[in-house]
Length: 398
Image (cartoon, helix red, strand yellow):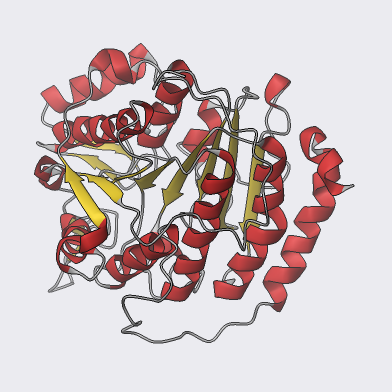
């Protein structure tokens, strides 16, 4: 079988909560470029860019370079560093962007860059350096997926900004210009993969990725997110359980909207009761794990109360799914995470879980956040009752 073929293994899966996704000697290939730090999102009242005139201290936009600098440094100097290999990246080509986005939309971004930048949509600012950073983020993610497809490594992590999962084929949204994960998924399909599963744990609905594959039965898009609904013209999708795809894609978009404060136990329950069965029945030959630490207990942009241990367990579950179905191959793509310190720690824990390390390498510096999982369990049971209406999941329940 050639390196670009992506035929899934015939191995029948064992329980994904118990199988080993990797040995302690496994490595994660990290793709990064310093040019992504040049995206300047400005200051103001949270993400508005506005100065009301009566505040002495204006905070940085939540999607700022400091958050990524800490992620970068904890991976380079933290205890997980021996398990990582570092790789450079490149700018994406315009022709590559057209595999997911329309020409008209890409041309509008190019024109915005040439004119010195502007607010593309609410909270999403293009300034000098932003377009180059976006091209690097897309190129970095494509380079990471190519590394897997060429057989050079099984687990790759694209450490990127600006994020991408809200960017739809025709418009920007939620700090995102180009859909990094979506571009990589399309590259995998074009390179021989038959079925790709996307598991998105960012606190916000991965609406752009879902929109891009909403009519496809080759991509299972799964998004666990807080139940925030639509937030305007740039984000018309609600992320509700009834958004399940259309046409041949009916049943291949799985939304798991979780109540605020779901926490570690609730997320684990959602993963084992909803996500694992769906992926098990879909049997993908590639997994794309879209991570955002804005689901953490202390994130300014989310309310989901995950701690390091929760992220560690999610990483372990997704790693085991990759072991069972895609021969251990998995692309991890960075999205949100806006607490400058805790996001880095939670990323570290996520990658520990992916590697299935026997013991935590870092203790939680902020300690445990109390949670009540009863609300989450009630919501997840409701989601499960809805699933028999999703055709390709129906047989998995019997």
